[in-house]
Amino acid sequence: MKEYKYKMLISYDGTNYFGWQIQKNKLTIQEAIQKELSKILKKNIKLIGAGRTDAKVHALEQVAHFSYNKKLDLKKVLFSLNSLLSDDIRKKNFASIRKALWKNSLWSPS
Image 1 (cartoon, rainbow, N blue to C red):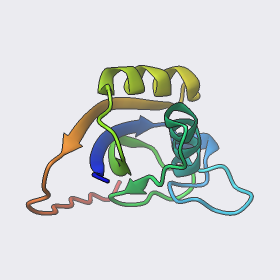
Image 2 (tube, helix red, strand yellow; image 1 turned 45 degrees about the vertical axis):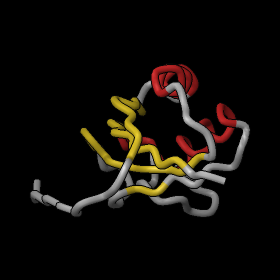
Image 3 (spheres, rainbow, N blue to C red; image 1 turned 45 degrees about the horizontal axis):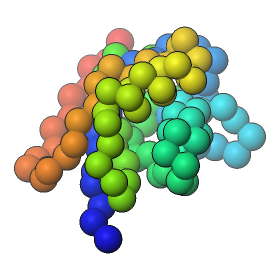
């Protein structure tokens, strides 16, 4: 069965979260998005972030991706996610991923 990869850009206010990565008994950005995305798609989805943030850290454009076995109506999924998630997490964009050509990271101390 063919798998499709989807990339999303996420903005969030991390004040109420314990960072990006799922942690036992802690509310995280990855868990919040993954939970709602799994509900929408009616399948357990594993969301993979391009990097991690620590507790209470914000992001303007966190990149994450997931795989799914069907083509999606990305506008509908984006609307649904933004409707279900708390106001401090916003999906800004979705795209299908064809092939990754390179990885580039930029880090700037505050």
